[in-house]
Length: 488
Image 1: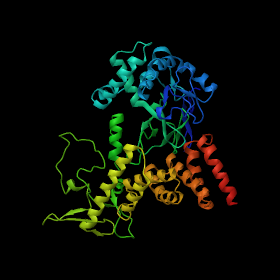
Image 2: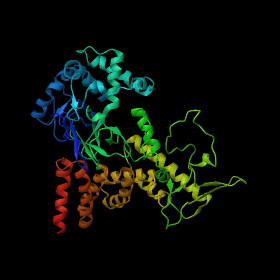
Image 3: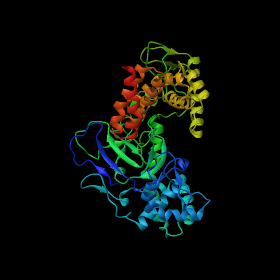
Image 4: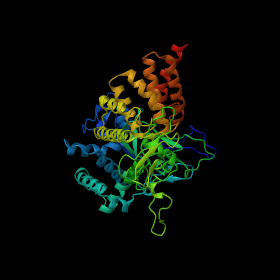
């Protein structure tokens, strides 16, 4: 199926589909091997390819559909067995094969009636890659695998191969299932024209290997120079988002959301000691804790700090001239913090940071650890504090896994405002959160609340995924229908 694009530049409404595309090249993640079809990416009963015994298909139809792309790979996979080729090397091999043997260099992916992208149009960031030791080490390791794997193709020279690698790593999309979990990687030429923003006006969703770009904001016209999606998870501080974008895509994001000082106050905010006040209180909790990266000024642009400029990141910190005593207070109600309150906040932030890092490294959220973190955060961290939000997110997913529904509902209520703050009101993850919460409430026969949550989910997912997407028609609509019937 060819890519489909909106054939008019008239005004755009939120929910409008503006581009649908099939991948130039893609791979199913090795962790999904044996659970999903390598062609359609559907989860279910699959059978091994009789030739290579490596890839899997859900039926003969998918096997036939994939054969043109798989036949060259099949013999190579069989030859190196029982060795397993890494996902990155397999993707690189697929791209090289298409460029060498098929239409890779001539293929045009249209995003309008007259505009298209070709493989050569993708940026390789060659100079950035050469200066990136981690990426160069990865490239070198992939080359070793490729020389053994692709015996039947003469590989490009090192410069060309590095250009292909650069285009691959910079322009890859993460393939997502209906629960927004990563299941693979794909290259989409037309969609690669869309730039990043931490405050996007469009969203990319997947139905198998098919990508769709939909608007989530009204726009006066379709101008591809103004279409923005998010390349990364947004529930992070601007500094962490910028760091990830610099490492992965070699640019410093300076969008309005990253530079919004009103948001910076919340990110590591403490809860005000005055129960009637919801203002986040800013407490310095570790040295060199940057919330945002600002462009470095050249020597001739730099100016000496004046009128306390050096302290502008800690505007709740007053330094008295006699003794340099720190007095931290709420800028809204004036409530002051004692040294003990400050120490409790610092220790809570340090404890939370440590456990979030541990959970990120293991990709597992531990229910007891999350509960203990949240208990320590209660009354100490602001309810929109980014570490509190991340802990809630981990805890909610963990509780679903162990089927502790009562506590999952309690955390879902607290998580919804966090998702709205970090992702916005029209993000697929917010729609999915409402769906999961509504499903739990329906199971608990809390029917009115369930219906309310499912309707919130419908409003978002209809916009971000469309009415024909399996998440909307096969998961959400049956639950919504059940909730409506049982409420009547």
